[in-house]
Length: 248
Image (tube, rainbow, N blue to C red; front, side):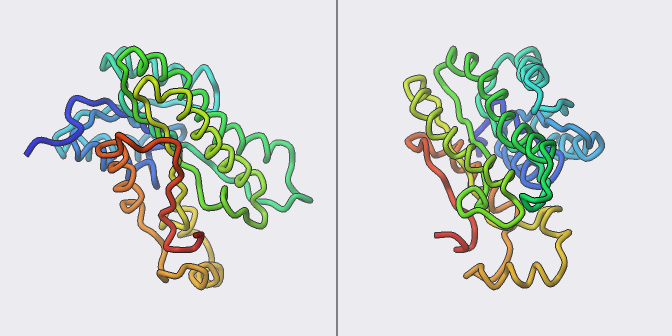
C-alpha cells in the first residue's frame, strides 16, 4: 500500500528527542523524507535518522540553533539544496527556564522567547517562499496547554506558547491563498524528558487534574500531526488540544 507522504519533504526542528522525535519518526513511516534538526544532541538525531531509514524513507540530520535567524535559514537552505523542495515544516524546537517572576532574569525570558517563539518565525519565513512557489505547504507550530491556561513559574514559556497560537492564526490567514495551512498543536503533559524528570509528588498532583487519568504519549501527538499533514487539507488557523481533558 502506498505511503501517504511519499515524495514529500518534511523539516522537523528539535527532532532529536521528545515530541520532535516522535513527529519525525511518524512522518518517516508515512514515506516523507525527513530533515531532522537538532542543536546539542547529534547522537540521538543520528539515531532518529537511522530509524527513519530502517522504515524505508530518507532522512538527514542537520545541526542548527533555529533561535538564530541565520541558522534557521541555513536549515531551510540545506533542505532545498539537498532535496529541491519543502512541503512540511514542524516548528517544534523549544526549551523551558522555569522560575517565578521575582527570580526570572532577562536572559531566562529572552532565551525561551527566542527558542520557542522567534524560531518559528525564522523557519517559517525562510520556508514560505519555497512553499509559495509550489503552491503547497503544511506548517505546524508546537504550542502547549501552558500557552492556553498559564502556569506558575512559567510566564516566559506561557508567553512564547501563547504567541505561537496567535502566530499560527495570522500566518494561516496570509498563506491560505497559496494552499499553505498553518495550525497549532497544544499538547498537555506528555511523557517526555521534561515530565519524566518531575518528582512523584508533582506528577501525582498533575494527574489529579487530567480527567483521563494519565499523561499523554509522544506518539499520540505525532499521530495528530500526521493527520493534519495527510488529511487536514481544509483545516487551517486552528489550535488542537491533545491533553487528556485537562483544558477544555
